[in-house]
Length: 297
Ligand code: GDP
Image (tube, rainbow, N blue to C red; front, side):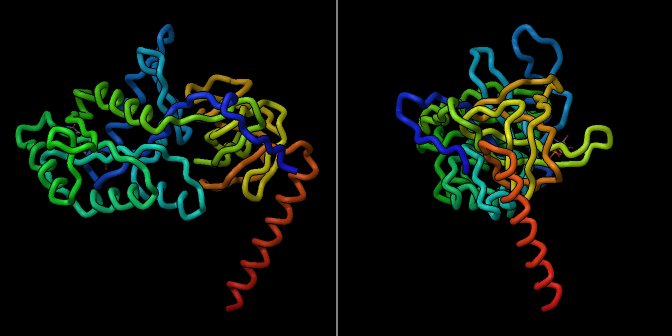
């Protein structure tokens, strides 16, 4: 059976917020994620994050951490939600200051609101001569979304993802939001979490990037993820370094599952390998039966 442990309040430890970046096409989601990925250099280490594993963690100067889902756009957010997975704690919605509030801006807002996820607005491209951040804030006000400098409670920050202006302050606002949410998890139990990305690596086999949401995942753990199972053989962080364990809010890519998982698959650690395998096999059978039925009708 799943190793389930009830958390006592004293077991709960503050965990890093998990952030998704959404917004209208070309408003700068990728640029923002790239800037944060490249600029963040953990104290005492050289080089930014070079690997793309679907999620990455950054550490700020004060030692506080933030984890980002590295798939910009709301497709990833909604696909995960459609599969019952909610991993995002805070949504950054990027809105270009040289444009209007666009249809996908509104859609992103609606997605975050439907999921009950707080929004921090990143009003981008302020380096452009045509930028008018106040127009965006006014547009938001017309949608009943009052940002702080318009007397409301919603956080926003003017940034240039291209030049990096304001990004540090934006991240500080994310941390403030996280503090309000009081995000906690018990690291001292078998891990549970969600798959964010999976692929077949020619040399290494099936690789899944997972976000540990509670507990701690270790090499040698027996894991069930969606219709796949296996024993964790190796784990890597977003810098390509081997890690032996991963705690709450940590993204890692793992080796050892017997197939390609899907974004949104939940994973959990099992006490024994056989049981994890049995459930995976059962799920696979059910899927096949369903596939046969849908092709018949
Ligand atoms: P996405 O579709 O939301 O991921 O947008 P991208 O990050 O791909 O950006 C779309 C375009 O806007 C690219 O040409 C970027 O170089 C440009 N861009 C993004 N952020 C900024 C910014 O802060 N200032 C300026 N001037 N251009 C930007």
